[in-house]
Figure 1: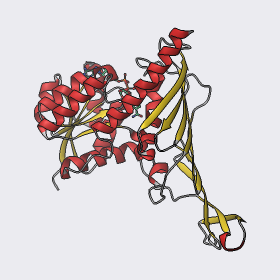
Figure 2: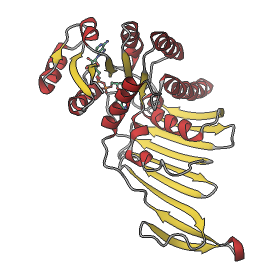
Figure 3: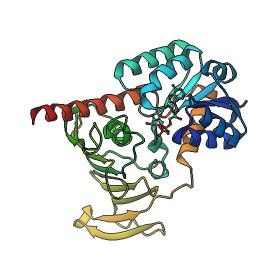
Figure 4: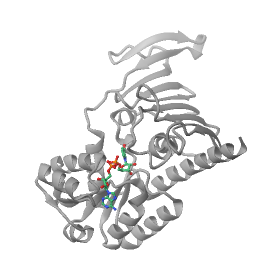
Length: 330
Ligand code: NAD
């Protein structure tokens, strides 16, 4: 299969990481970068021995696909230009600042018959990948994503910056419409909520209690899920998962599992089994970009397409509006 000619637009913190990965990926022919900041684009281009383009139009003439890693408020304008040029695009999360902007991009991509993938990188976290063989049907989810303060990303509320990662994962796992949202949040150091908590109720009965903070002392990215036959704990930061599940009587004797006990009587005896799923040594960003290029090459559905990105944004905005209402009621 021929290589995909790629570029990166916006080479700040995350765009320089995209550049590093494209320079390593076999399926990519890394052509060049564009950033409105000349010093940045020259620096990153020199590092990866590609061309620093001084205009977006020039870059678009030379590539088949791009990553957009500019600040969120510019995603729509930049992506519009990319899609009008008929190029495939991976847009960093969140897809755009508004739903109208997201809708416009999705329609444009359909018209031009090109791929939109959204950079919800946790879908490619080794911990999530390790759970692929399990039948996940969570009915209660508790997640915590806590970060130390960093002015980068404070152009949007913590819900759009950090919580949206967990919102996307939860929506992909629960696979049921959201019925009700309750939320609370406080703007402590910036003008938008820096800490937020949301309770999502789904039509299938699942409840997710989601907390995100960017003013915490220590980092934490954990999710715990409970379903009828199992408890699953995911650590996104460590890239690890623990599974405690009910198995049939006698199960749990092989080396990879640990029998914690038996419950039940007579015919209904069950084993309580602890397992640590095998974790593949993968770089989530590299895996995400490889997956994007595969969709470009084969026309397959991206793991996180424009509609998925839009849905995560919609729920994030609903959470934001609940927090807003509360603020006005104080
Ligand atoms: P950053 O400020 O470090 O970098 C943004 C870069 O974009 C800057 O170099 C800036 O000069 C450039 N830029 C701004 N407007 C531009 C335009 N119109 N055209 C070309 N270049 C432009 O920001 P960052 O932390 O790298 O975040 C970038 C995006 O990545 C944001 O949308 C953010 O939400 C997302 N992000 C995603 C993750 C993740 O885990 N997936 C993590 C961090 C950031």
